[in-house]
Image 1 (cartoon, one colour):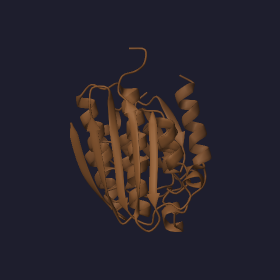
Image 2 (tube, one colour; image 1 turned 60 degrees about the vertical axis):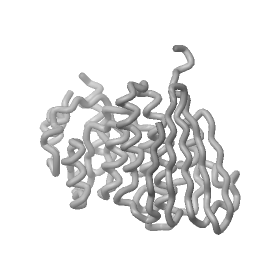
Image 3 (cartoon, helix red, strand yellow; image 1 turned 90 degrees about the vertical axis):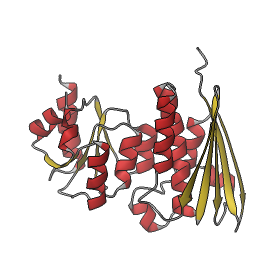
Length: 112
Length: 141
């Protein structure tokens, strides 16, 4: 399943890096603690978070995250968008909260 | 191979740049992805520790065929009780740093977990030196 498939299935907003939409997604990780993501998120995961600052992109890049979903209508900061385009990791958005979008993503990934 | 990186305390925008550089180098050297992952986790945590706690620091990276050795040397407040600092969940980070999702007290334990050797020496009011090593050859190879 690609990032694009997930964008379409969950009706997500695309904030940045549409070039990375063809990336393969192999799992998900939901956390707002950067060290937790650093220590535990699997490569190829979509990361669901409410953090919008630029360090999200540093962690996402280092962990080979496929895309980031910002919850509750939160928008990325300008330098976060710049880094997203630079590192080719899309930032997506939803008005749903983390529990809801995590559940939907789980079903989508693991039902196939 | 020897590399050095400068880290500025408080500069969260550039936090992770050294880790990103080292990741690139290890990839070019064809180090296995699982080992790169461990080095990157440990190095990023060390780098963020300097940004979050110290005034400035330097990172020295030495790579040879068997292992990578990293020294993170900072000028900063130092750590009064290293055993306490190693405890998962213990943190002295500011509320602002915590709001960003750092400062959960997971950094040093993450470093310990992802390295083969780790040593911290600190002088209060002077600075901290964190050293770690990761073996680049998997034991079954």
